[in-house]
Length: 201
Image (cartoon, rainbow, N blue to C red):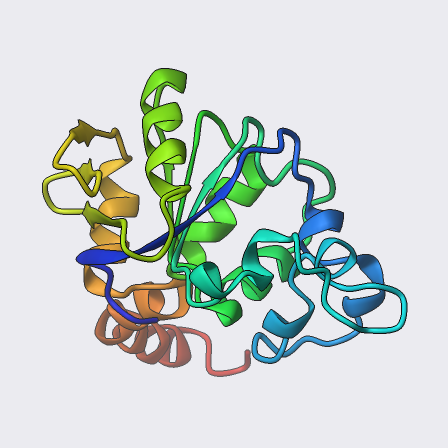
């Protein structure tokens, strides 16, 4: 997993509340266990017509937001079923930060496991960032994980809270496998001792 320290990027405004995981990645795309390739189907039913053509009005189809790395979202983002394909699809598209007033718990945790930073801010601050994002690709929002700040394109800075362990994992690029591998020496020692004590196992 890549380390996350700072990001300055284009933010796409998505003010719709209760964006659930089926909207993020519809159920017909859950057959794969690969994390890559799902970005093309992110928000599929909102991005495409039935014939596969793009819906021009959808924010990520607009030229200014095609390379967005930040989403400014409405309340309760990621609700619904606990499919990990949802953060996979967002990450594969290129989204690295999602800012909202609240997230569904399981989705929130899955973001960290996939190298994305979900940020919770009060409604008035999200409103400011949402309006900033509406300015298009020239309005870059900056996120600093170490200092736990989000800064708008005109210099307004907001502080966010984050669990210390989750912050440590993102800063150091540690997913669950990498965390386990940090203990490989202790695991090997235990396995060696266990093999000697119980050779019949």
